[in-house]
Amino acid sequence: MSTENEPDVYTRLALLLGDVVWGWLDHVPGSGVLHDILRQNFSEEEALALSHIPMKPIPLDFTTLDEIAASSGLLHETLERTLDGIAARGLLYRREMSGGKKGYALLKLAFGYPQVFYWKGDKTPHARKMIELQSQPEHVKAQIDMYTGTETKPFRYIPTTEAIDPQWQNVYPAETIEKVILRATRIAVAHCPCRIRNELLTGKPCGHSTEVCIKLDDLAEVVVAAGLAREIDHEEALQVIKKAQAEGLVHFTDNAGEGIKHICNCCGDVCWNVGPIRRRKYPRDLLMATYFLRETDEDACIACENCVDICPVNAVSIVDDVARVDHDWCIGCGVCVPRCSAQAIRLVEKQPKPKGSADFAALHLAVHHERATHKASGQAVGSKDTDATGARVT
Image (cartoon, rainbow, N blue to C red; front, top):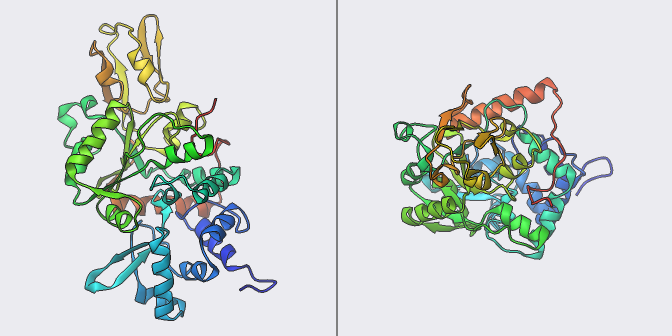
């Protein structure tokens, strides 16, 4: 409970999640939409317990129950029961740590928030309520603004395998998506949050497959344990990739050489990153690292327009009977390459190269440092107003 001059527990938790360097959202007033989302999902007791879990720079960095209890002053048994109840709903990650100790980790932006409400693919009244809240301009802007102030982007596009020169295929950032999968020890597949959200908003599917959101290793472990995704083997994961490529979907992963947790397969219709680039809502390089660009062999091009039709970001047009590429918007996904019967397309390395990291932990430490420096400098953050989540604009 709060006093007249003291913020309530939801406001305190909202301020925590909206004020840390990489939490749920950027610069969100505690009394705003995030406060409403927290109230819809947590009891006061649960919100209080969550407020004592540290939001660490690296996602999936767990804190033991003993440590949380010691810092919070809450009764160990009561705290454990409360946190386990939240974890059972998928709103908190839980795993067994070394020595058999129980550990917990808060969801972070893109690592459970806001995806947790949609990964199962359920179109429930609660999911509908969440997308209504998350569609508010305040929330949309605060989510996108999390990606400002960092030269190192947390995610990167990875080209379809046929588009990658064989000499590059074993080396980050050009290794094939298949190699990323085969390195994983555990794999899970969930529904695409963007497509589920779009269907909740519009009542219409975008037309692409939904169960194509792949999670790897410890992220796979926790989402399966929470009932948010189903575990699959390497063979089925490769089939998911094959299906995604046949549909012209764009792969993106964590912008790291090792320890990759995500493989998303995005479309230009509704997905949170490709969709706004397609509609020129904000610059390509604001959100994602792009390592390659497409070039056309003008002598070989037959102007068939296959690449124009398939380009997920509308970066190709026919000019003077040649397919020409707008390099300000090309994301180097390579989706066009297997569609070119004339073999007139190739990918080249983008210059200057984006910043990346050798592994997942180093990536998020770099992002954390850059964001912290940006926020401390007091620089204005912001992006153009956009629709809720990349949902189709007609």
